[in-house]
Amino acid sequence: MGCAKTKLVESGRFTVVCYEDHTNCNFVCSHLNYCTKPLRFEEDTAVTHRGLLSLNYAGAETGTSKIKQKFNDIHDELQKIHIPIEIVSLVFMIIWMLLFITFSVLLFLSHIYQVQCRHGNVCSNPGNNIEKLSSGCPKRWDGDWADDCCYAFCEYSDPPINGNIEYGKDECEPNRMINQQIKEGKPFDQFCECKGLNADEKREEDFYRKTNPLSEGRYINYEKCGNIKIYGDFRHLPGYYASPNFRKYVLKIICIVALILLLIHLLFSYLVTRMIKNLLNRGFEDWMSIGITVEYNPARTIEQLGLNRNEYTPGHLILQLPSQQVLTNQAIQSNISNDISSFSHI
Image (cartoon, rainbow, N blue to C red; front, top):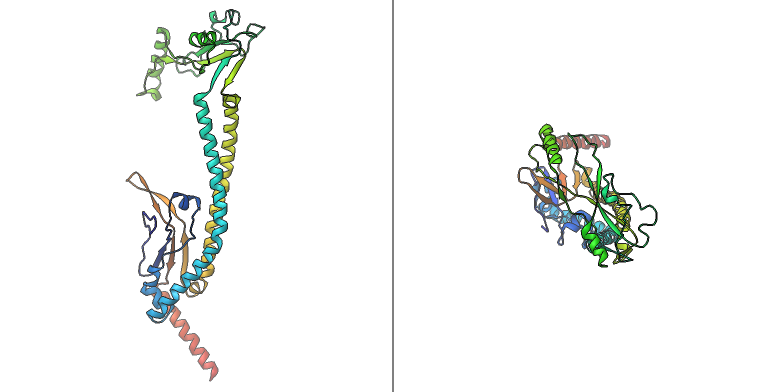
C-alpha cells in the first residue's frame, strides 16, 4: 500500500474493504487531490473474499476473473476523470504557491525595510518643545517646523490603573538614537526602546496583579515599550513597496484571496468525492441489486487519542455483504418466484 499509516476498517465475514492504491501517495495527493496517477483500489481482498465469491458467482475461478474484470472496468472509468481533476488541482497548487511566495517576499521586506530622512538634519525646535509635555505625540506636525528637517519621538502609554482598561496619559519623548542617525544621514529601522516603570507605576502594577486572579502566575514585566512617531520627509528603502502601509494592503489582498481559494478548494474536494461515489455506484449497480451496499470514504488524517499524533488513513471502498438471514430470505423469495413461474406454465 502506497502511504497507508492507519487502517480504520478491516475486512470481515460480511465486509470487504479495498483501500486506495496510490504508488505516489503523499500529502499533496491525499489532501489537495493532485495525484500524478489515477485512483485505483486494491482488489486482492475482494478477489479472495469467500463471502463475495459465493454471493456473486458460482465457483472460485469464475468468480475471481469476474471480480477482477469488475474492478478493471471501474479503474478505466476513474482514469477518464483523472486528467480534468489533475488540471484543476494543478491550477490550485500554482495559486497557493504564488500566495506563499508573495507572503515570503513581504516577510523578507519587513526585515530589510528602513527609512532615511531626505534632508539629513534634525529639527531644532520639534513640535514647539513637545518633549516637555505629557499629552502624547502629535498626530501630525503643525506649521512648518518639519518641512526641511526630520524628527523622531517615542510615545509611551501608561499601564492600566487598578485593573481599569482606561490608560493614563501618553508620554512623548524624543528618540535620541534615531535622531542621531537622522543627523548622520543614515537609514534606520523604526523602533523604540523599552524603558522601566517608575516606582508609582510599579506599585500600581503590583496592586493590579494582586487584585486580578487572571494575572496569577503570569510573568511580571516592569517595562513599557513605546511606538515610534516620525515627522518629516522620509525616503523608503529599498522602495515604497517595502513600506508597512503597502505591505499591509498587499497582505489584506492575500488573506482575502486565500480565504476565497480555500472555500473553492473545499468545494472542489467535495465535488471530486461525490463524483467518485457516483461512479462507484454506477459501476457496482448490479452488485447493489443483490443486496451489497457500497460505501466510499476519502483519505483523511485522524488524531490518535492519547498519543498526541496525527496519522494518515487512506481512502477505502467498503462492500457490505448482506447477512445470512437476508440471504436466506432472498433464497426463499427466489424459490417462491420460481415455483409461481413454473406453476403458471402448467
